[in-house]
Length: 453
Image (cartoon, rainbow, N blue to C red; front, top):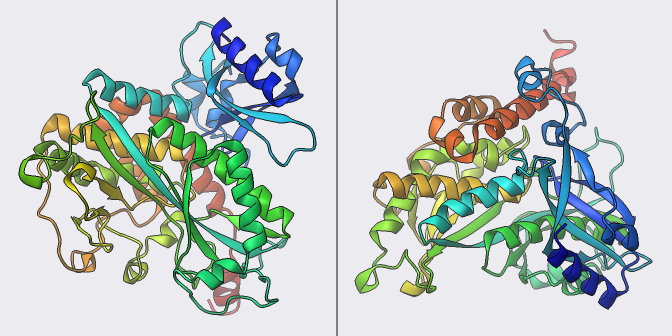
């Protein structure tokens, strides 16, 4: 690390009495990888290296069986982990004072590792910065609290709250339903405050045991860091209260899916909203951003719906609730994929509602920005805003991970912008996961085919 970063982190560690450091890197799935070492060794430049192969590892821990992968990644090169001093957080549940620090990845040559999701987002943000544009984002993250479940063949159930009873019906926005888990959420807020996470509101969503946490608007990179840390924090908090917290897109068959809605706007160097035009109307730049989202989001779906389970949330039947299945846009319309909330002109923004809670926040933000960027550069005009139910337009997004990966593989503009090597790597990993899933015989197949076909 640089001397300036070392001094900043040394002061921070001394101030908090840190005895141990967790060096964190997000892989393609959003799983945190890294090393743990004593603070003194870390600050003295202890070895913080990892192989770049962590970015071609599947969610099951395997690797793509792909000649193309071996061709461009034959050596499994070492990466140097370089800390971001602005992304140092306490681990408030640790017995001894511990830090968790998010790192960037560089090859020993000094080149950034283009396979790193955080680097992909930083690259996209640099394209905006070169034009004097600064994106502002605000994620909304849904999740379920569920009973502990150690048998993966057994369906998940809502947890038991303070009353000693399970939720048996949907209780959207119910305060009492949130209060059932007050001890858990009080500890969650304490942990978030200790980590200085920009958590805003907590609400009960549609599903039994389903909640949503909103983050305050801000810099995309910082917020992606915070979403990753929040997921870890909530899982840990839930375990300490004898239940699970899950960010699966569709954890229970008869309940709504969980999303990661992403509000986004664009400001100039003086902080003026570039999406706000004259006379209170959205600007031409705003319309081109929407046009880019409409044109490129279908090909970018593997970043918003990265797993087989993700597409269960996006089934047309779910559209009667709040899960979108096309890229129509409209004002104050929750049935569309791209919603423009009502508000003052200075707050003009678009809410991308496609991503599931299971998606990697770095890649969700990078892909959404990339689609909008291509729209602004190409001056793509959007379709007219939709005023009615988006279901009348039909399902225009890929309906499974296989077709979604094929669409991404055919989209050269996105690959060029996000990085060809990164895109090829991502496709290989997700195809390997899809193949692994297909090798599993489901209980549905045993139930309906075993003695009937």
